[in-house]
Each structure stands twice: as structure tokens, then as C-alpha cells.
Length: 256
Ligand SMILES: Nc1ncnc2c1ncn2[C@@H]1O[C@H](COP(=O)(O)OP(=O)(O)OP(=O)(O)O)[C@@H](O)[C@H]1O
Picture 1 (tube, helix red, strand yellow):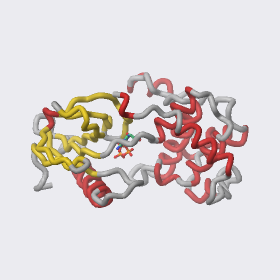
Picture 2: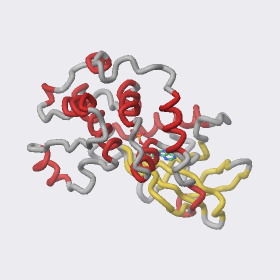
Picture 3: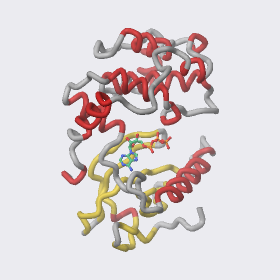
Picture 4: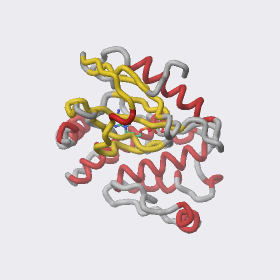
């Protein structure tokens, strides 16, 4: 990434400003991915500038794949986010934090992400279309699947954890330290909320089998299961009304 420096020109809704990482103030955690937190930030002396920043550590001693992933992520967001499309988040700038050896990607902050959606759904206690939502997530799994190098059965686990998190409102291992997790997982029985159907609960149980050989071993296997099969391309009016009503409950990011 030869063109990424510790300073960059930020293009923000017609404004141009030279920024560096010291000028970014963390306001809120927007979400967590494989590489760390995505934060909502503003810029020193420019509280009107709000953006999401994703930090990715470069050249860690134990994982040389990170540089490749950071490079790919940056290329993708730059390519798709540089056009002014209303449904695609905008790319603003990329910086290097030399102190922590991190790539910092500055982009438009989304009001609605899947995490914010299911949190608003749980606050509002509205679950009438939860099964339909989980079916859609399972039927469009590229959003959640990690793919190689861990293998398909790890993706099944990841899908199961994500479905459980959406259905229950919290990540099942949220407050556990790594060593506690290792002990707990050996005897773990997922607590599936009763807001979803028995068929969907059984599906989540299959994805979350401790013995990975008991999990589905191909993507087609789950796409052929009646619980996720035949998800209509066009959502029903009930689904649309449900999603719209939850989106309306998501607090705007400008509240910060
Ligand atoms: N631009 C954004 N605006 C608002 N929230 C965001 C934005 N980008 C990411 N998030 C939130 O942060 C979470 C983590 O994003 P991130 O890109 O790190 O994870 P990811 O999609 O799993 O990718 P990766 O595999 O690179 O970690 C997302 O699931 C989303 O909730």
C-alpha cells in the first residue's frame, strides 16, 4: 500500500481536509469483525464530520495473512465506495497509524447494520418475522461465511453462532475469556430462545454440534434443508413491514 501514509486528504461530502489518526476521536463502537472493532469517530474541531473507521493490524508476527487481507479490504472499499451510490457506503480515506502499525480505513457510517437491526428488534421485543429473517440470513450465507482455510464445518459453526446471536440479542460467549471458553465449549448446550420455531431451533442445534463431523459438510446440504429452502426472492409484505418498523426504531448516529 505505497500510497497510504500517516496523513491523508479526507473527502467528506464536498469538504476536503487533511487528517491524521491523532485527529480522530472515538465516539462509539459500531461493531466487531475478525480484525477488531469498527468505531464511530469524529474529527478534532470538526464535530460535524462523523465516519466509521476500521483498523487492521499490519505485519503481526504470528499471522502474515493480515497484510493481504488489509490490502484486499482496502482495494474493495476503495473500488466500490468511491462512486456516489446511495446504497453503498462511501470510502473517505485510508491512513496508516504508525504507532500501532495499523491500516485505518475511513468510510461512511451506516445507520443500519445487522447488529444494530437485531439490537433494535430485541429492545422493541418484536419477533414475529424472526424465523423469516434467520431463513434469509441462512439462504444468503456469503455475508457470514468465512470460507477457507478453516473449512466448511467451521463456517457452519459460524453461521449457527450468528443465527443464535441474532435470535437471542447477544453473542453466546460475549463475556467469556479465551480459557473460560475452552472449558465451557466442551459441554455447551446452546440456549435457543422460544421466539423461533422448533424447525429453526433444530437447524441451529445441527450447526452448533460440538463434534464438527456431525455438522453439515457442504453448503448445498443446508440450502436443500426445508428450513432454509425456497426463500422467496421477493420478501412478503409482512417481512417488509416488519423490517421497516425495526429500521424506524434504530437510533440515528447523529445522536452523538
Ligand atoms: N461503515 C460502517 N458503518 C457502521 N457499522 C459498520 C461499518 N462497517 C462495519 N460496521 C459494523 O462493524 C462490524 C464489523 O465490521 P468488519 O468490516 O470489521 O467485519 P466483517 O464484515 O466481519 O469483516 P472482516 O472479516 O474484515 O472482519 C459489522 O458487522 C458492522 O456491524
